[in-house]
Length: 154
Length: 154
DNA sequence: TATTGTTATACTCTATAACTATA
DNA sequence: TATAGTTATAGAGTATAACAATA
Image (cartoon, rainbow over the protein chains, first blue to last red):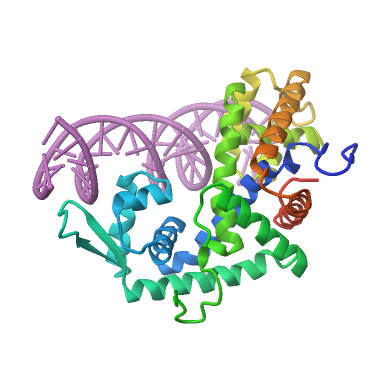
């Protein structure tokens, strides 16, 4: 094994940030999907709820689609499902009756809170091998990268 | 913004490690896929080559499937494609003629090296907003998590 | 009969395109 | 005519199940 040339130089593809982020991202997403599955949700549903909870709240479906980086037709089915669960409400904008304004219901806020608690719980297990310092360093770096990539972050 | 209802300490779901790792992982994987696309490869192909380059080298397709965490039938199509590119070779194990032993050709090693260089280049751009200290802290944390999750890395 | 690789099929996710209703 | 939302369709990716060769 000749992979020690210090720092992030040699070491092969699996040691690159983009590759590791990709593979670990899949693992993390799968585990997260597994723990929220009993709530009847997939990660994208949570992402939509989070966008509603955080943002300038009320957003048209097109706005949401842009924020989430998905196509508008996908927002439809996500919203359909969340509406069925009573987590979001569709209200026609009186000013422009073509627009459907999505808002999070109290039930939705509750559901999101449960997802967050579940995610924090999973976080503890997922990062159990890290020291507190390593964990907060990871948090910090991920926050910067997420913000840089235009992902929702705070 | 008092969105603190029930036990919502700080930040909400987008700040959890698992959620951010999931979303950032998708972005990273997409970008990586984009830069290796001119080479005729997808991330999974690179993963297979990396497993061959690193591992106890020669592996049967079933071994590879287990290592990559995918189903054996997927290894078939990945290997088909890589064989077409001249990157891997299938050799029947004389001891057990059911087994196809995959090995990386010189051409495959070359291709993998080009992928690695490309990934490093992408890494630099992807982590440009991080200080050197933050970058190595990220590397360190990701390495631990990857190893913990049983992913190739070392 | 059990196992390796392969092929055939189905399912999930998400995007593109066609349609409707407002504007 | 253009736009927001919806519906219909299609494609990528990957898993499950049936099958052939070998053990």
